[in-house]
Image 1 (cartoon, helix red, strand yellow):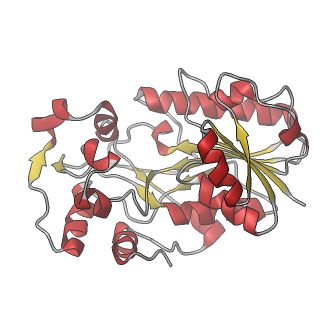
Image 2 (cartoon, helix red, strand yellow):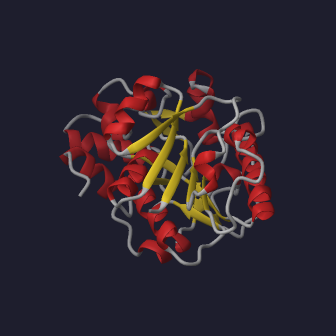
Length: 294
């Protein structure tokens, strides 16, 4: 039986873990919440209650064929990296580190691919890049097979412009449901289901690239999906607001999204999965509005 360990089991990682469990994998996943651990068991996942900086036990890693890391970095390091046992992996263990496209930095709206040199300008981007380097060093030491999965902005059911315009969501509170206008600014994004497809393709592949950008085909100005979501809902879109007029009102996270500007290429992702199910926000938001992600 193939074995997988998930360090972090949130919005993106959990659907993948449940898919693997349905395929017969023995899946272990970390959680800080003992109540959540009960729901994980119902989904076929063996819960491991863990919270940094406590060390992780050796046992799950000793025979793991796959380790998926989605824990967020903190203070320039990855808490999970600091907690893993010394030399924990088999030489052929596959590691997937869910990173961020924020590691690239600002390119003035130009296209970037996986060969582009990283120069993050935000603290969050620098922390991600430091975490990437830490996992790469461990993979080199143990001869594990690591892929750095650089994710664009994630949306999907419950986390989209449709949901934000319908009511109170984290995105709405962060200012992401406003139609902010900043000339030349584009956002990159990807539907959660296409992320899961890409991760599954990496798991199944006999040879994997070291870095893959996870993004859809259409970088756009940030206001476009909000306008389209309002159209789907049959409501007037929020008024356009100039970014410089309300910059000070935005949360630090929301401001950080506008600090850098680039267009991500996704050739490697599409070489793995073929055409995306949701090549742009239009297909993704339409599916969310209809209540179906088929």
